[in-house]
Length: 213
Length: 131
Image (cartoon, rainbow over all chains, first blue to last red):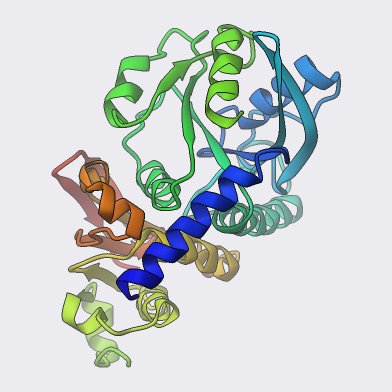
């Protein structure tokens, strides 16, 4: 790519973002399976629209389709920020249907779920490359954040220059380690929360308004 | 552009490792790189890339891997790279131009044959088993 072409493309991208400010921003909720993405999406949707987005579960890959909740109006300090929330399937590089068998799911259903899960991950990657304006990256703060999926996804998000907030979820659990997440991604802001209990949601909404408003 | 064929007895005896140089990958289109990797991995090989993939190619690799997973046949891949610490240090002009270094050793193998034992900023330790 020539210097001028590259520069022109970059400027076009930046101006496009500046002048489309009136449209709701599409914010993708991303992260590994079982980080609490749907619990968070439901918490945000219930707090500001009264409806939920989708079913939450301890079984990984419960969310196997990207789900969008449009026109979520978040009020902060007297002004309103409107976003579309996109709850996405947890990203992974492998899916083994046998893992579903451990959750009291029969083989036929397990095979179907695994096929849907793989389609969902492919869909989530496509949304990330084409269709989101910002990312809320949700991590389970009781788990080691130094995984390949996290490294790759944060790299992909950074390469697209998307604004990103990292949420250290599940602070209600005893093993929660927020420092570990801050250390893994020092270039980004980490906000601790419990989406399940609704702890620290005020700070989450402040930052959503600041980053995506 | 395929890999040299191993004889069936070789495959039974061990695990094939393909180390692919940056020079070999240079000039290949994204999908050619992804095909080269997945064709090797689906045969049970461990593929090591000297210079890795760009973030966009990694995203497509995940997407194509997902479309190829099939029960009892292919469970997907295990992939390991070092974290992209250089991203944060890119100059403003590099960021503006979308220029970035993608040079990072990358190890990819079949999910049911390679297991990451340890990973941090500068060490990856993996266990590889036969098919």
